[in-house]
Image (cartoon, rainbow, N blue to C red; front, side, top):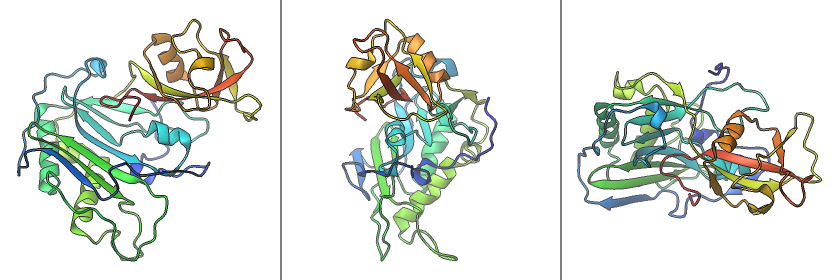
Length: 308
């Protein structure tokens, strides 16, 4: 368990980092709504069964609802990890950020809690989206004399039996002075209101349809690798050996290219679960065993492959 010294904030408002990396919004563009399937005023979620948190990620479940932030002024590490604010799967699991200590170095992997959610709870989530008018296309363009650079794009994706819909809103909730609303357009107001509900206490939306939270330990991770040879790693750095033999040799896994690779080797997964942000690695099985590498890792979130 982690001691909550710092409240978890929505990822859409926490994407600023130290290295000044600016990443573009999603390819479909800010203010976009993508709808697949037949439109309708109501929706029924896909059938779900009894959920066990230990089964998370084992059977490639369908993501029913996902709330994330993309792009913006942030670090390469955060941009690659892009942890969801909320992710709900059709087998009845809800992932939310876990409170963590506000210290450096923190855990290498983004920390999440997992809770079982009943079919009724999933229906209530979809009903909240419908009540906000967001099961249909809405205008999410940022308008007015507001100059906001390098902000993230809030992304809400929902899948039902009838539709798949994806809303993207650049700089959602950012701006507005004292006594002023950060949003003036109806579509953006509706999305912001829903995001605030989904980012808060989820029982306010679904009632007692959630089980007890547990720490989520993923069954696989996705990594990128950078060579750090010759770089000052700082006083907090710890350098350890990469497990050998490993299916992902560091010296041949896309050094300096940020190529993504998925790893399900339990030894590697546990090593990265236990590692912190100041952990670096040597690969004793490589042709250059003294080279030092940074591994940037994220859990293999349901519905997200290395190409996402």
